[in-house]
Figure 1 (cartoon, helix red, strand yellow):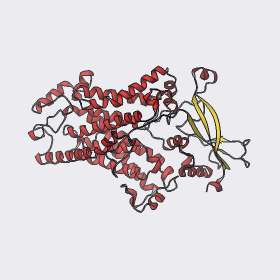
Figure 2: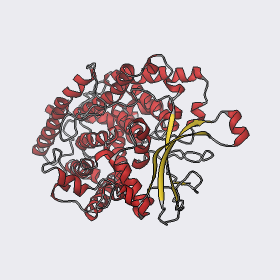
Figure 3: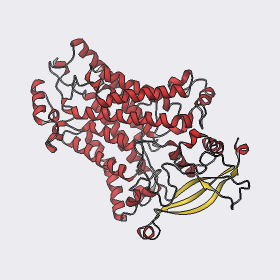
Length: 511
């Protein structure tokens, strides 16, 4: 089978293990997040009910299994199937069979989750949704333990990482001046959508370190991605730099599975041989000796980079026909992804670069990017209710507490990522746009009804399930306390009330 010498990359076994199981873990979290939140947000009695969305569009442009009808029960069955399949991949069960088995498993995850995303409306409009879909489709063609990873799939995966990182870097350079004058991190840790437990410590670092953070970000996103396509060990070093910078972001905030997706996908450039040279305690299957034995068994045909090849006669396939068939499928999928990459490549060079956009109905070959500009002040939306008959300023107003977004001044923010709190994220966007959004008025209506499903999305209901008479919406400025202020007050936020945005309303008003 000398014709397949160039097809495989046996030196990337560790890369395949991390890519397949890592993406499966992220799918598991995504389905779990949907199982817990989708019915309340988008279900039959949700804030933006999917049945109404489907009825409003006689022909949905994007594919979804809900095209023929939605029910909360069907959604739960789909999430259950997604959890089961992704769990099996994490355990490595499909990888024990022929390469068609993990292929079908990942395509099932891709189809199920795409069905959810495509009816998710504003609650599923985040860039990491389409990133997970594209990643899941791509790694589906990595094969199983019976054969070495295909070189072409590793290449298109590295191309996905390049678009993710370089696109984010270009968005920043073309965006706000704070990225060009290295001041963006003066504000970002404080004003990011959902601060984590260490965000305040990051914010209080000296400004010279914040400037160094920005410089490091530019280097990691604008320079390092090119080296993913370089010979080894440069490709592994580039992947390691991306992983380290993404871990820095994991520590400093909560960005759902965005950072973890980048970490997992970066392993497409990691060579077993380089890993074992740097970490001699790695398992034998990734050792230099094992690599040398494999090279000898595969006719000794190897190269130093991502294009390492060698399949020889020991393919693990039941026959030449199956090897031909699998190679044809992999090459066809890789060619498809390469062709679809034309549009995001053109977007990267465009002066009007789009951020987190899809160019086709299957959400493959997307363009990515985040935080092209950084907000300078953190304004929080505060939702309050009262049981009093007269909703004056003197009424006993009680605040609804959210799981992720800041609330009480003394509360330590939690680490939620890679889990995604969709309601909390959209609450962050409201001050940047407008509070007069359909889903938000529906949310106020559910609070006035004391809807149990909606209240479960919150951390605390101040009325313990009792319907409030009135609700209102105001905003407040949130700033991290300095070391001196914290020692004096033991509070992590300095909160300055601003104004009422939506005057007190009752059930009949919102309805």
